[in-house]
Image (cartoon, rainbow, N blue to C red):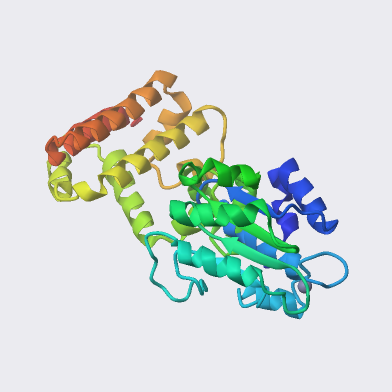
Length: 341
Ligand SMILES: [Zn+2]
C-alpha cells in the first residue's frame, strides 16, 4: 500500500491548505513539520518533496515518473537530505552523529547555488532539524531569509525547543496530531497485524502509527505483557505471591514497562466499565476481572492506578524491588478475590 498526501488529509485544515498550495504550486519556501514520534513527519516531508520534484501532469507526486522514483529512494539529484546519518543521508550508512554540523549546511547551501539539472525545483530535507548545532542553524538562517529561486526547505523536528526562534519564525509550521484510533487500526490491519493484537496496541500507541507498528511487532513486549497479566490479574492464592516476587526480584530494569502495562490494563477495564463492550479490552483477562470491570465502583479503578503510581515512586526511590512487587501483587490479588464468584 502506497501512502499518499491524501492519507494525511484527516489531520485537518493545515494539511488541506498545504496540499492545495502544492497543487497550485504556491508553496512557501520553508516548512517546519513538527509533532510527536510516529505520527508520520518524515513520510509527509518526503511526500511533499516528491510533489515538488514530480513533473507529471495531474496529481503530484504521481509516484511513477522518473523524478518520483528517484525521490522515493532519496536518490534524486535535486533532493538534498541532511540528517544525523551524514551528508549523503541515505539512512543506509548506519552510524548516527550526535549533531548535524555546520559543514553539512554549508555544503547544502553551496549546492543550492548551482542550477538544478532540468531547471526544476530543488528540495532540501532536514530530518531531526533540532540536532543542528547553533552554528549550523545560523548558517541555514541566512539562506532561509533569502532562499534561492525554486528551492524549498523542509525541516522535520520533534523537539522544536532546541531550534532557534529565528529559524522557527522563518518556516511555515505544519503540526501533526495524534491519529484517530480507526486510522491506526486500518494501518495495522493493512500490515497484516491480527485484529486482537491491533486492538490491544491502540491504547498504548495513543494515536502514534509508528509506535503502534513498533509495539505490534515487539515480541518482547507481548511476552512481558502476558507475564504481567498472569502475575497481577491471575494470582488468587497468597502462597503464590512469594514465588512470583522472588522470580521478579532481579527485573527492576523492566519495572517501567511493568507499570505501564498494568496501568494500560486497568484503563482498559475502566473503558469497559464506562460502556465500551469491545471484547478486545478484556482479552486474556480472567473472568473475575471482567466482573470487576462491569460492577466495581469507579474508586476501585482509581485505587489500583494509585497503587501502581506508588509502586513506580518506590522503585525510583530504590525501595527493595521484590518488596514493591509483593506489595502490589497483594493489592491486585485482594481485588481479584472479591470478584471470584
Ligand atoms: Zn511523479
